[in-house]
Length: 207
Image 1 (cartoon, one colour):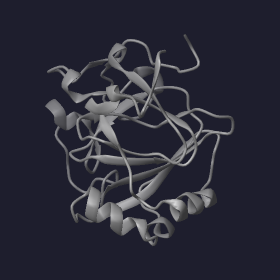
Image 2: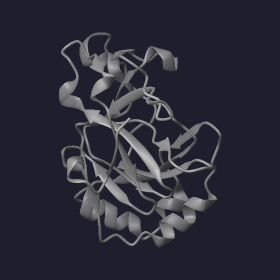
Image 3: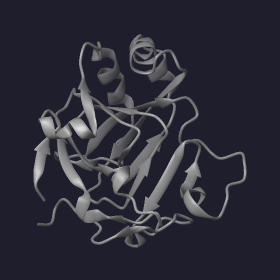
Image 4: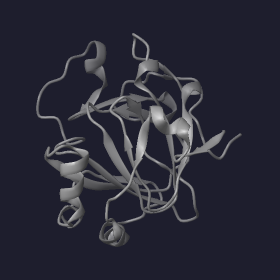
């Protein structure tokens, strides 16, 4: 599929590139995180949250709200699902990686979404991006041999286990974790997920 760069103006409807953050220690500490053959996501990592950059993200990017810093690492070439939050998400590319993203505004009234609307953006290593709350996203895709490492910064508690009952109708069906609404592709086989992605389960290795 057509690949754009996250620094292109076209990324502006999805988010923005963040500058002025000192991330050397963060990038170094991320080398201690696992890089599996599949994908692993950990919402909160004490070693990452102990770094000075946490205060900068919390104060400047989230206006003082409590945040968590975790990671999403591994190897992936497919879309599989999209999710959104009621808040922005910051991703820091430790390695080169690819984001497959779309707009929540294109989700239909019955919570289906046509994967033909998805766009691919290359994120160079060392780049921090804010994805707005209305940006559909999921796990990054591999852009270089060996896999990807990605820092994930979100409001505290996001993507953690639910401790309240959720409804079975409307948008409530999409809630799979705290502050997380998920629409899956049936080919991905995500247990318990609402399968509302229509069209091809995009694979970046295919034309």
